[in-house]
Length: 259
Image 1 (cartoon, rainbow, N blue to C red):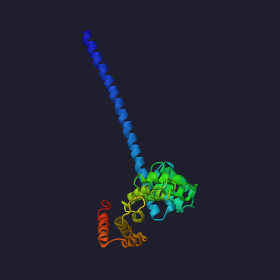
Image 2 (tube, helix red, strand yellow):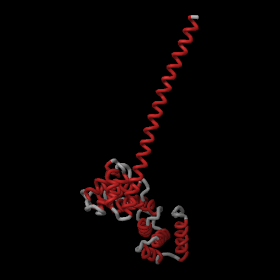
Image 3 (cartoon, rainbow, N blue to C red):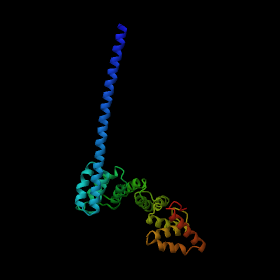
Image 4 (cartoon, rainbow, N blue to C red):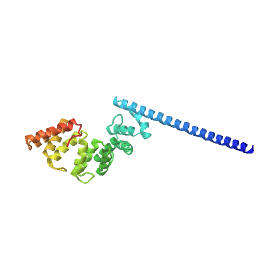
């Protein structure tokens, strides 16, 4: 009997231990669930406030945009920080303030926002709101370019071509221009045409000079038509036909077939 009582006592204690443990786990689960709900609600509220500001800005109501975005920016929202930077950069609904624009761009850029990174780079390149510094400009352009931002890729190409903030390197300039050109950037396409025509950073090739200039012209780059015509004056009719066909294939493929 004593052995049976001890066995039953042990079973009851083990049951109680497991019950208490289960209740504690359940309590932790509901606490975690509550935290998730609170976070989700906060995210939804963030999104709603940001969208309200965006709708207001699009309608020209910058006072409302400022009211909605200011708290979000102070809480670390990179989109709000970037958009407020634009407002101060351009004087939209606030007094134009380059220093404040730089501060806000930097906050967003340091969180990896590519648009803020390129704008901060431009502020350094032009000396707006900060001391002019081509090295800093190139560094911020690079961060945005590595994220696939075509404007940053084009700007970094310029920095390499002219040796601003980086060692002058036409080959590297061509590489960054090409990345931007493959995204439809007409400025980069024009520059590629020029460099192919000169043989800078790439082997001289009038077919590709014509092709890229023709594409850039079709995309609205006004100077490109003149460069295309200069290339054409140095080409045979067969080369012109080849270049035209290549340009057509390049554009129709969404710039995936441009070699």
